[in-house]
Length: 416
Image (cartoon, rainbow, N blue to C red; front, side):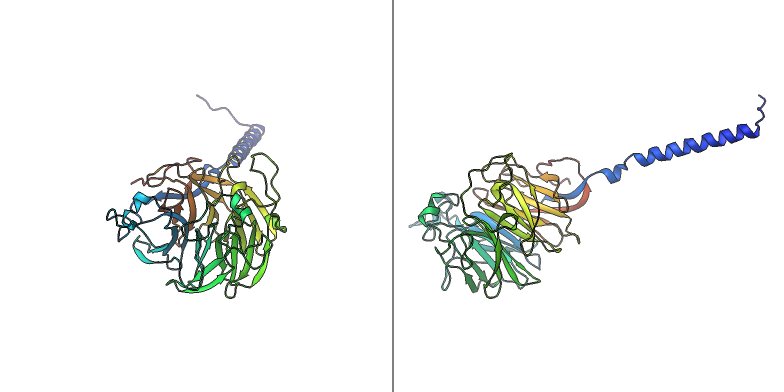
């Protein structure tokens, strides 16, 4: 076949067509999202079904109501060793009805391998132990802080935390927080039993749920709590009052709100309980307004920054039980324990958008019954505790950041 001659005009037209085709191809490629970049990514976790190791001495745990991780990656928990079922603690009867089991001391400490390495706690001289302990925090000096939400008079006589009738009768014993050394030596009590006067009382609390100490300023932040509707800040050495605030950074109001209803305008005050606080490296304070199904974010002076609602259709106990930070340099992710929906929410910290969840209701490892508290260690692993009849401490091993394959992952069982 004889090739046709190409005139300069033909060649010019051919070149123009090739250029247009290349341009269209490049524009099309640019307009299509890069699959790798467009895919949502989030931290991955797998439950460690062999952690922690069994307790000694026929000990068992009650409602585990707080968890924290210290600078050596030791895991601290506090549980309620009263209120166990009578048949669980036969040896405590007189005479003993069996050889097993015995309530463990309230404060238990595990090393990263899951060995129990320390234990202490309970009533003692010089301080008022909570009738219903709640929350544990190990500060930058190694001191241990404990709150409480007990409405009873004596140890073991605590009324239920949600018994609002007790509030009007003055049965609010736990109006204090306690500070101990790592070995359990009593150091400081702030507030007195039955002394709380409401959300604008600078001297006492009312059923404080959780604490943290800011290492930069040595200030104690308290989520206060089951009776009050505020965050309060004090000096961590002396207990001297610094400041407090309610929802949106406003002065707290103790007017009893009606039960939460999904879809209503966002309430202008916290509902009880104000259940948890955590502080990021960039000086933002995250507050769990549990039965309002929301997290509010503040500057450390109480200035409101933003809020997010988590599963806002949740009624009953609410969805935001506790919140922890990821351990990457920018603390890019928030982990929210949701004891009503039996899962952990993973949020993008900047946008507060939910990326994925893990967990499901059940008794097996990786499942939850009332996941209550959450903390992370230096390697990015997550530790959770369960209250009510969950009564369990679990470890979820960090497996890196990867594309999200399912919005709700369910039970994150080990793949290998």
